[in-house]
Structure formats: structure tokens, C-alpha cells
Image 1 (cartoon, rainbow, N blue to C red):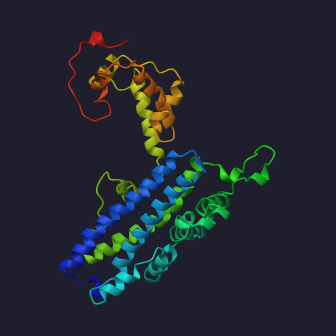
Image 2 (cartoon, rainbow, N blue to C red; image 1 turned 45 degrees about the vertical axis):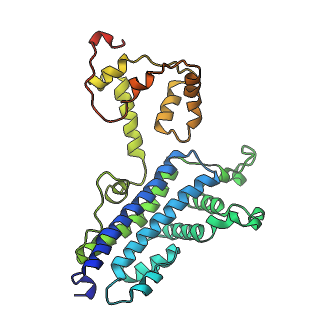
Image 3 (cartoon, rainbow, N blue to C red; image 1 turned 90 degrees about the vertical axis):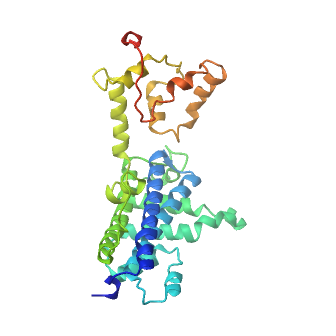
Length: 327
């Protein structure tokens, strides 16, 4: 048996079991945050949106790669300081090669292109705008990500339809279901391959590095292996249908909500208000109507007391008569 699989010393076990276990949770959280943010934006266009997406993915996947390397390569017989220095890199392709030399990972061309994009973003692009000479260059992170999407998804560009699109189509890429699934699948292949190695090596070492807190962001990534938010969005829609339907949920809490007098929302149709419930980030401007009603004192001061329990997930016994329910 290899020295790597002999009983670990207490410090080594603590490091690989607890510290790396925490790092795994952090990695999953960062990847989740990136994909959740991707789910909320309408177009792949704004520099700050692309930066947030790539930043979280670059760090999340890098940390996942380094956890994998430690479990694969480290033993107490090697020089600890030299080993830790070898991990000081943000080059995702170099980290991949280190892993691949020990245990083969089957990735396709698209995955290497994406790892290359993350490497270039984190090592170069993320600080490019701090240089004055950047004014003479395009935003590299935006340009690189959009070109990646155009090439891999074979999207139309302004050259294909200049008459109908006075702006460059490749600079306003619609963030549709196809794009989200493509990014999710690409990331999922990389992440699942690394997590599988982590689980296998941890079990051989006798650690529980792979253990993920149930219900956490990392749980969705590593255990549920879900890399889009399609199921969550569909469930939200079903909840709305059930709440509004006479044939849907009919518990005491719903009856309580029905006793509340609705405020006067009339700037948009109902579909737009539901869109705000589904995604309050990109639809923030719609809250101005609510702010106006507050400023004009059209909402009673004690209204907060009436609605504060909605959405808390707690159950309350409300004392009211059935004839108080709005019909």
C-alpha cells in the first residue's frame, strides 16, 4: 500500500478532513453563486455581470482543483513548504495537468477552452482596467467570454444580419435556456470529474473531505449535481399557481393572506409582477411603484405587522373567523 494511504497523523487528518472539507463547501458555494447569478441576467453584455460570473467560477474551480491535488499528491514524507509553494498558481490548465498526470480526467475541447478562459481572466483580464493603456483595447473579459459563446453555440453575429441589427448581436447575447444549459453542462463535467476524484481519494485516506452539508449551496453542486436553476424556477411557478387556484393549497396561512386588503398595484400587468417574484435582481426598477405608495402614505403604517410573517416559513395560529376571508 502507498504511503499516502497509511494512517494519517492527527495534524494531517485534521487538515485533509476539516480544512479541506471547508474549502470544498466554499468551492461549491462560489460555483453556485456564479450559476445563480447567470440565471438572473437577461443578456450577456454588461462588463460587471460577466466579471461577477467569471470571478466566482475561476475561484471556485481553482479551489476545487487544489483540493484534488492535495489529496492526490500530498504525503507527510514530502517537504511541506515546497508542496504548498507549488500550489501558488491561478493557472487552471497547469492545475489540470498536475491532476491528469496522476489520475486521468476525460475532458473535451470545450472544457479546455473554458479552463483557458478562466485562466486568462484571473491571471490577466481582471486587473486590465486598472492600466491606463486599457482605454485603447476592448474589455478582454467580455470579449473573450462572448467569443467563446458565439463559437461554441454557433450564434449569429452582426455580420449575419446587419440590416436588422444596428448594434452588434454578439455584444447583446440573449441569456436563454439553451445558453444556461450549455454553461451548466460545461461546468458540470469539470466539477463532477474533480469531485469524484476527491471522494475516491478521501475514502482511501480515511477522511470525510467529500461530506457536504445537506441543503447548502454546495449540496446542489456536488450532491444533486444540478448546474441550472430550471427546477427551482418551475417549482416557484407551481407554488404561485397553487396559491392562486381554488383547487390548490387551502391551509390556515393562505386563509389569513386572503383576509388582507391588497395594495393598489396597477402600473404593470400580473405577469410583470410575477416576473419580479421570480427575479428581483434584474427587475429592481419595479419596486419604485411600491416606494411611491409608501411615500404617498397609501400603505398604512401597521401594514408591516400584517405581512411580516409571509415568506418566513413559520406557522402561526391566526385567530379569525371564516367570514373575514375575502371572497
